[in-house]
Length: 105
Image 1 (cartoon, rainbow, N blue to C red):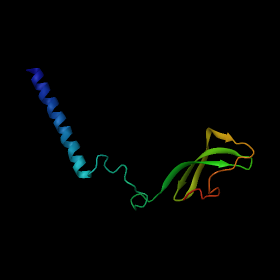
Image 2: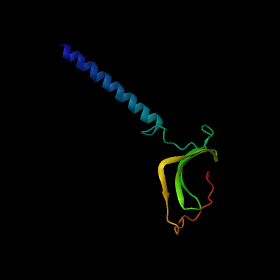
Image 3: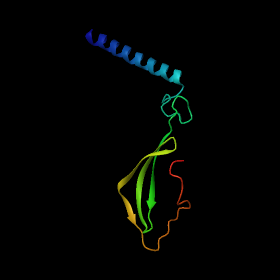
Image 4: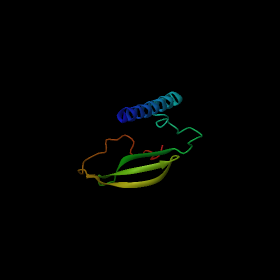
């Protein structure tokens, strides 16, 4: 008798959770809700943050990777990535076409 009562309570809790989950999916019309929506041009989220890495090479062919953080196309942080560097040979040429490219586009 006690087991039957506990089983009914567990089934009721599970059904309630399933109904809540289904209601959430129907209301938001997506499995992830709006968590992956792009808000970069939205007035709700006007700030445009971007973080990426870029290798910067000097005249001695020493290249270091940096993590660059931009906010509204302005650099807010540049920090070197530890261990992400290389010294190329003297005759090495950077194969990238835009060596003087704008950092925050």
